[in-house]
Each structure stands twice: as C-alpha cells, then as structure tokens.
Length: 204
Image: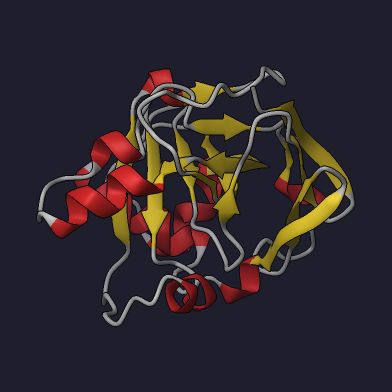
C-alpha cells in the first residue's frame, strides 16, 4: 500500500504558513508504508528534529483498483474515512526548502502518518461538509470542515489516479486547515470527526 498526501488544500493553512503562491492543481507528496502509526501506538519524537508539528487531516481509504478515474465516479473508490495526523519535521522541512532540495524526509519518516479507526462515509449526509478536530491534553488545538477544501476528495482521487494506479488499501491524506503546531513529550492526542473519537495516542 501507499500513502498519498495533499498539500496546500486549505486556504487558512496557506495563510498561516505565509505561502504567497497558489497552484492550479492539487499539490501531491507521498509517504512510505513504514510511515503508518495506528492502533493507538505512541509516537516517539525522533532525534533528528527539534520541531515536530501535527497536521490534522481527513483520511480516505481506497477500496478498489483504479486508474484515470473520472471525477464523477471517484466516490465509488472509497467507503471509509478517518482522521489522521501528518507529522512534519518542520525544522528539517524549512532547511531543505531554503536550499531548494527535496523535503520528503521531513514528511515521510517512520510513524509520521498517524491513522485513526475508519468509519463509513455513509454516516454523513455530505462528505464535503463534515467537521473534524484535534484535542491535545483535552484542549482543542485544530479544527476544520471539509467544505473548506480547495480541492474536494473526489477531485483529488481523479487527479492522483492520472499518475498513480490506486490500489485497495491505499490511503489519501486530504490536507490540513489552520492551527498546526508542535507536539511535546507526554502530550495526549485525540482526533475526532464530528463527535466521534477515532484517534487517540500519546507522544513519547
């Protein structure tokens, strides 16, 4: 399986990161399978970074093989969603970007993709109008609504499938809204879609 992630997909996050450019197509990057962190296992802060940030996102699980998928049919290629954390070594990313170098290691390191329990998208009337949020130590630190995505889930699936064959079990992280920030040892993270807690783990 592979993990496909979307950057720059919420204008509020672009503003907080002081990004002055826009893209006419989704911005895509990837994480390896070894980036998965699931089943409530703790996240250990790596020794190569002093600035690990959380980015809370809706995650989609692909349920059938697809290539060159038309946007109008994209909804058929996923049934389950969850909330996830795209961990970013921000200091590493910033340094690499300043040098004009690829920054995959700042996003794709081991355990950098925390994944909650999946639930059916059919629980929601409109997949492009669901609330999600992250609590750290019982305080809400980030929240968003899929309505604010620049590129909808179906648009993302259609676009990505032009370049990569989507396979059963592939995951798509759909972007983060404003409110990203650092995690610290002993933090307790809880991720929600609406009032359903789907993700819970500790920082070590």
